[in-house]
Amino acid sequence: MKCWKTVLPAAAIAGAGLLLAGAQDGRNAALETLRSRGDAFTPLNFMIQASLGKTESAMLFIQAGMDVNAENSCRYLPLVRASINGHLEVVKLLVAAGAHLDAKNIYGETALVAAARHGQLDVLRYLLSMGPDLEVRDNNGDTALLWAALSGHETIVRLLLEKGAQIEARNANGDTPLIAAAHSGQAGVLRLLVKAGAQVGARSKEGDTPLLVAAHYGNPALVAYLVRHGASLRHRNARGNPPLVTAAVWGSPSMVAQLLELGADANGPGPAGMTPLMIAAARGQLKKVRLLIGHGADLRHTDDLGRTALDYAATNGHVAMTLLLQPFAPGS
Image 1: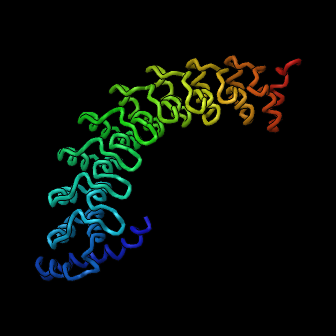
Image 2 (image 1 turned 30 degrees about the vertical axis):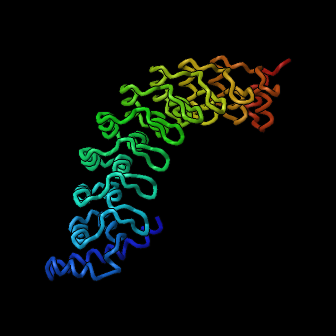
Image 3 (image 1 turned 180 degrees about the vertical axis):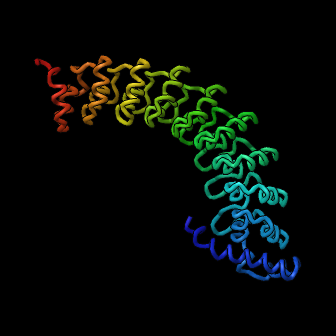
């Protein structure tokens, strides 16, 4: 963004000056002034006028002969920038002047993807009326629907689904829109996608399901909803973690409690045979340990190296945890 910040003040002033010239000397004089100023009549300044929603100024550039698809030094496309900022009239002007709907900016975003990502509903509706490719992808493989799901734009998600956007589209990480919604805790979008038929068992390239992602990022309500709709509490990702182990590492005590109430195996191990109890003990998390013990966690269970939860607590210097677990040590 350094390029944008550097050029914006000067370009904004130049644009204002051109409009003043138009008011004082007439439109034809303004056009001649614009054409003769090499420092002002540039694709970059044109893009900035479009980004700021300056419809009249953008029109002057077009009438003076500016190529609406010309790449500027910052590689920010006028149509994409206007779409990001929700300037519908500028978007209409640019499309009417021949702006390419499938043109991509430096991030691989088209106007449609940008509008969906930034929640610009009116712009999106207009762009959809022009028949764009719904499955066009940015540099990370994200479609408009994936971005809308991640960003929590429920109305846009619904509209894209109605227009036929692929509900199981995947980005470069293998995330589907449902996994994306779980990443950012977007409850409304997640429920909408499930009701529309999204696969609750979809897996990313790392093997993460929507449930594993929700357990990681700590939304107990979403976890409960996914389980009620068929998500597996036993599925493990590529790292060998089931949801309860994920919650033991990353989640809150309320997340651990929710998974246990839903029937997660308190002794289900993760990598190297470490159980949720061992993980919580190693981290000194008393609330999680008490929850796990209350739901049947085996305190004498050993990992692949023969270590117990007590061993982990003692090794990591958690005195209170060690005192809690000491009575359950073998031979006690």
